Image (cartoon, rainbow, N blue to C red; front, side, top):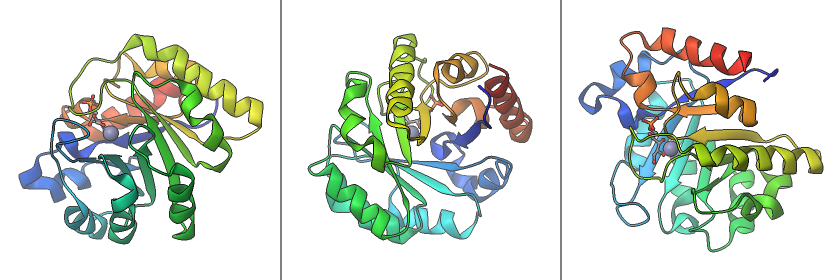
Length: 220
Ligand code: DX5
Ligand code: ZN
């Protein structure tokens, strides 16, 4: 890829008892990825707006909220108020995606749509011109530390192709199993934003890992 790669560490893999310290350790990243799971849309439960508010107060990084919840229409305002800079909801769960995008924009924030592995790229096509971010899930959402699904590479390429066709350039993010062995392939397929949990927080030197992932993506 030629343009600058963005690394967005997922604090799902952080040490929750030392969250402030772990957030400091990723200060050189481009975004902070905040995974909201509701125990319903996905079989796991994480954190909500109260924790986001505290995270917001301890970092200048833009917060990219990934809402893995069954009722995104009902909760996006809570995350906008708590300090999210990008709010990404799953198209599979949205009641009215267009209305949500409008609401996110009215708050002056970036709108993103995520697609799970079984959802085709075409599901985001009607919204592409209005989005700041498209998130192609490269694992089934719900847990950190899963293996990258190679079969998602053509979907990343398809999203990039649709964007080029429309002349739009939202961030194209990938999430799940992104690390030293996979980031280049995802970049080559067309992604420019890399959500990475275990690869970043599993490294002793997080800044070095962030730099390494960025370089691998940019050289791809
Ligand atoms: C998974 C989450 C991811 C997760 C990625 O459902 O959306 O953001 O933290 O974790 P890794 O990078 O470990 O696959
Ligand atoms: Zn995520």
